[in-house]
Image (tube, rainbow, N blue to C red; front, side, top):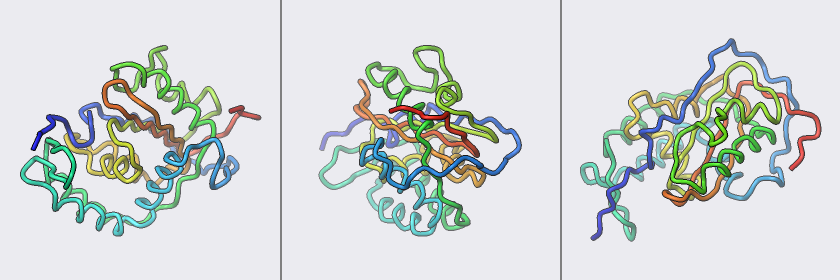
Length: 227
């Protein structure tokens, strides 16, 4: 069987957490509809998956437990799929399971159109290149991009996953955080102060797929943000 020398959560050596730690404040911006038309089906699924993990972490621990049985050492042997070589192997999955079992349920994230547009800017800029990381080709940071369409406050962060094209795999990879000592991606997902989220999914020249996720404590949309 062919072994693909790649990491499970594709390039998690690029810690996708960037955080601004100002005092948390309640989100006073209006809620966006539950199923906004400007998002694709997969992007909606990613938001649903994030909220499932936040509101029912013990259920999510069961998903990871079922997944862990496919590890042999540091290799992931899923039936019918190319073997993937991870950095930490099953130990990272087991550590994530333990974390989830001890994690208290959190509130759901509410989707923000402006934050989704900021995330989509990054997908458009980076997807056609071999680049990874959080600095846009125009020199923008993630906070620059989401501030084009509104204003965040409290704190904010960005996660980027490369190589996965299903919502569960994207969120599982970020929770497991293979190879990232700080578990920064996981910390973003389970930051209790976060209330808003934006997601964009697209292609990537090297890793086929990329998913950008923006988080914020509070976000006020600009008036009449256009698609």
